Image (cartoon, rainbow, N blue to C red):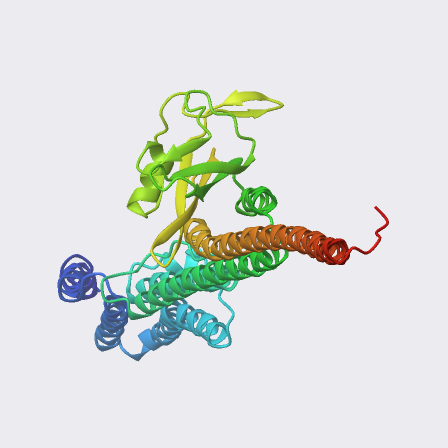
Length: 409
């Protein structure tokens, strides 16, 4: 019995602590350490049972075998709890994930301080990443391309691919919006060209009517608040000027002139340079816009020459409180070219009409002169006939007097 007690003391205070320290040093904190500890302790118990049987005899088997069975069942239970159950639980979550169900593991599964606990934590990280990916995909489906999505690392291929996809879709949407906007602008310009073409066909005989209707329609179509059209006047070749023929909400303060010579003022400068003038800094009181809300200075002024065959037929001036977009500037330039063509035709028609009127007046004058000459000729002819008749009578009278014949005198 004394040797048995000595063995137990050596076993409990010597071999077992030493073995546990060795296992801890070799395996540190991992699942192998737990298994090795169980095997080591079970081996120590088996060795103790063997020593007891050798010392006491076979009678020791009466308590040694039940103790060994209890220890075996306990070791199996502990092994199942620390290894089998966590692995089966992890497998169950992996099976759900395989069919698209993303469910993170609870803290009890991740509380293990070994490889299984690390795998459960890694699984939760993967589950969270997949959940974030699903939310990201949902945001992209809803055209929310500003949704933030962070990479899990520099080599996260899935995140990089998803972020690239988002950026490409965003760029495609922006490009599509730009194309739609450009198409809308092109449709707007095309519709305007058609409307003004109809206007030019209808109003091509009267310069004032054309100017008035044109500037009214142009200010309305471009959305500006004020506009005027200055038409070329070449009646005096030495003083070519541009006269205000049509205006909308026009009320100049300092520049009260309604006409500008070539090179004088912004209108004259625009005509002289044959180029667009666009101002976004307007001098104080250059012009005021009057409305029911009072008077205010515009912030933007656009002057566009109407050119045909390098000749300026008019200058279009538009004023606005807001920026005049580039596509509207291009539209006004194109409409200006059409206006110049129409003005050229109107001037030709007016000149032709004036020449026809002058020709008609001259023809009427010639007809009156011809009628007067005809009357004078007829009167002269009657006078000549009367003179011939009187000459014949005188000749007859002279003959009778000469012959001594009696006359009625």
